[in-house]
Length: 336
Image: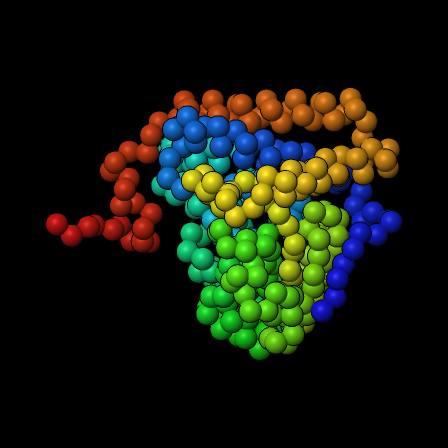
């Protein structure tokens, strides 16, 4: 097990760093406006927000290639936007419109963009972990060097499929990166009440013969560094890597979560260490942005999200006759 901390020398260029900051701000704005739209009943169904965890997705996906695979669980908006999904398609999906990334039939938990290698958005806890191994196997079988990165929450560490998959992925040296987004709470249950072993890095790495790395994902550049090394190992045929990315979500598990499992003081303390604000300060200290640049990015992000909301509101509803489309490759006809 190893732990990665930030280095004094940045691993990114100025343009890349400013781009990452903008992506994080875009995700945060998308999430916060989605919360308001949900409260106004313009978004239905389940909704799990990513606010607070932005550097994890942006820092890791930001160092992968465009042809690599990305797959995640139901808190998926942040990963999709970090992968480059048009926020108009994302917002339309949230509102169940036909112009959405899943034609309005997936909603918050099922964002997909296959052209960008973004393979979902999966609602069942841990169900996508074997799928990631499958994509990695396909890449290796076809003689490619594409990598699959797979995100899941700390609650998924207790799913049986995870352990079966980790064993096979390591045995076959599959090019896959497994990232547990450890926000320390499985829905509403703290880690110490759901896991006999609190050190998830120790649980997920060495027992399966793969490196286990602990990283503070609020440090976006540290997150990028561990992902880059994991991708290098995968492309070199050295097999999978397990990353425990410590994080904190500012919102509840879902929109119906009153968050009675933590205090207001704890939440306020976490928000004082907002990773986006922290990265803004870092880039200012480096002289890479100034107040004027920050204001410009803020205004651009607001405008982009408002245009996405307008696009979604003006898009048509998904027609009823599309209900049975996109279920199987061949046309699906329901039984009478």
